[in-house]
Amino acid sequence: PADALLGPEHGGWAVAMGVLQDERGSAGAAGVISLERRLAELATVGTTDPVAQDALCGLLARGHALRTLLLRGAGDPALAPAAKLLRTELDVDALSLEAALAGPAATLTGDLIDRLLYAPGMKLGGGTSEIQRNIIGERLLGLPREPR
Image (cartoon, rainbow, N blue to C red; front, side, top):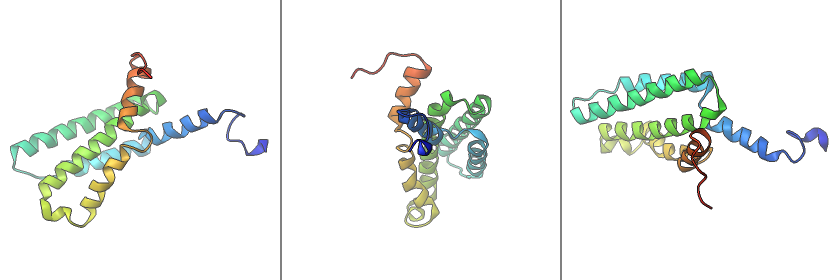
């Protein structure tokens, strides 16, 4: 019935895109707050290995750049694909570094291994990282569409 529609009749694609936009977002206060908490966690990771320290500094720099993008974008839906791509890639890289620093025994059970195994799935939800790159190229940068 008409009163059960989520939008205009034959407007399902727009509704689906709106849901995906929200899923991709990481924007808004909740996305910024969760990112800030994650960066604070990363800042406490200690290591004397200079290669790991360099990787950690790179992760923190990427995270703060993403935070700035989210704050400046103020929920701009055009930035959602970039925010989603940057956040999921950051999370996978950060967890990989944390697992490497924790050593093999720490990855057998516990919160770290659960988060490490879950993280790649986030690269799929809301559109894969490859789809996000296509959207960024075509819609944000104005590059030609990918050939069919």
